[in-house]
Image 1: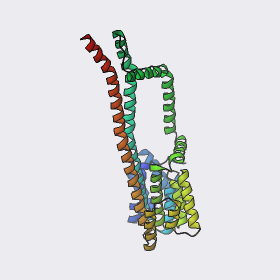
Image 2: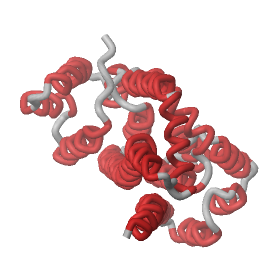
Image 3: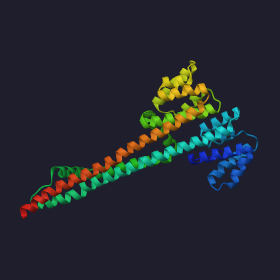
Image 4: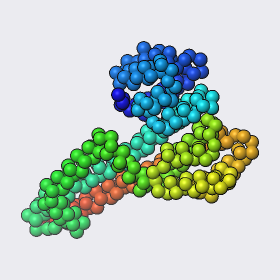
Length: 348
């Protein structure tokens, strides 16, 4: 029976555990039983039981992982290749680092996006509250005194009144969108389709494109270390970081150029996946036999650069939201206080 997917948070830990088993010379079947005995999570126990049952009859680790249906295809493909080339220990360690990098990047992106979104929601809530609740009160007071608020405050109040008239319909629309978002987030098939659409539409440009290139370089590094040919490495890596139209076109062009007999560095340069500086490093690495290390270095630098861009973007968005909120509040206050001060002066 097909097991549930292993959470991505557990993949680097599990790969590190498998690396320790292989390095110590413990048979995979026996090592998995040891992991099963120390496990306390019911879901982890379920798929460990399945793996123990499969490996005790001599089934290779890659086949057991693939048949369980609990692990990513990329992981099972890399382990299968490593078993054939005798580099299982190195590949498991690389997989552990690869999934650690992916988790760290996701956490950094999530943390960077959360604060601006919260600030934006607070700003909208403050403006709506002022326009629909506070300004009408001041407008009534000024009307009794025979005066009017400033044009900015009056305009915002009218906008708030129009918003209040369609408030029920707007609330229903927001509720429907929220329900759709929750359903998409909870249903794996819908979540995957939405993620594919986002990757296809936005994943090849800007920061998302750079993150995809980072995953491509990291995958290429692992494939090269496992003994794959450049053509196979590009094909497998393209499956992992693909989905975006621009990235798919570049990886396809890279593979075609390699099939034409062009070196990996030249193919990557012509495809536009890597910068000219990175391609020069690739050429040097091909000559010195350090292609694996060079690709790993490129992946790390691409990841760091994408995270720096996110930090810079967030660093610009947060002050902008604060400034806009402060300016709106200040303009509203001036539009209300100036007429009030005029009335007080006239009364005095």
